[in-house]
Amino acid sequence: MKSKATTVSGGLGKRRVVSALCTAGPALFALGLLAIPVSVVLADGKDGTFPSAEQVGGEVFIKPMAVGTKMPTDIEIYDSNAKKADLGSLVAGKRTLVVFFISAVPVSVEQLKKTEVFVDKYGRGANVVFINADTMGTHLMGGPTQAIPSTAATMRLIKKEHNLKRDMYVAPNDVLSPKGVSTRLGIRGLPTSFLLSANGTIEKVFVGPQDWKKGDI
Image (tube, rainbow, N blue to C red; front, side, top):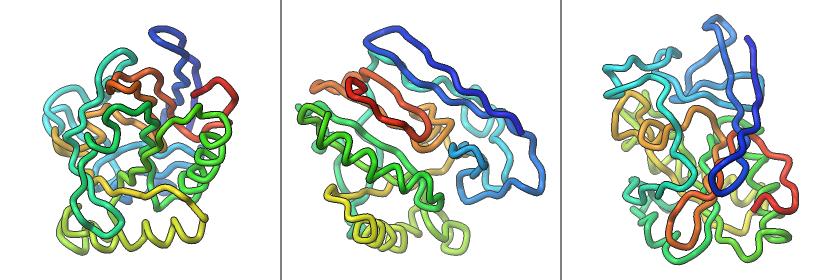
């Protein structure tokens, strides 16, 4: 397995892009998303392989949402009580860091507290929305949507154990669907964070765990 980290400058700010090139083998396992030992989780298919172009309705390696574009806010999300929530209302009129993570990977979860502490200190009043792009027990329960209650319970546990202030949300993600979160946003690794302006325009994109520095947000 090989991994590559690159820094891309341009648009409204600097984006850190972490990409991983991997070869399927016994070390890989599927949890709705694929965990790999480089602290980045790649969005893959249910059997541990990447979806085909036909399955996602286009290119396999979809380009991520670009700096300068508006992030869609009609993404289906639920709060930590498994009640449907509205992403649009959570980010409307507020400079916001939307963090997509995977609850099944400790490194991804640990990044939440680091992000919260950083934003509280250097975020210049930025809003933060944590969204778990993974659902627990998906295959046993018949699909991402059916697994929302158990995943919401996991969100409550994570919030308590990591002493997080912010509410946490769940986005049922089917990577084989053109409507899946990872497909719509072009997410190829988790965590992925989008910094949005008050009008919803993407200012920066951060892929993978971050060593946050003053000025990043």
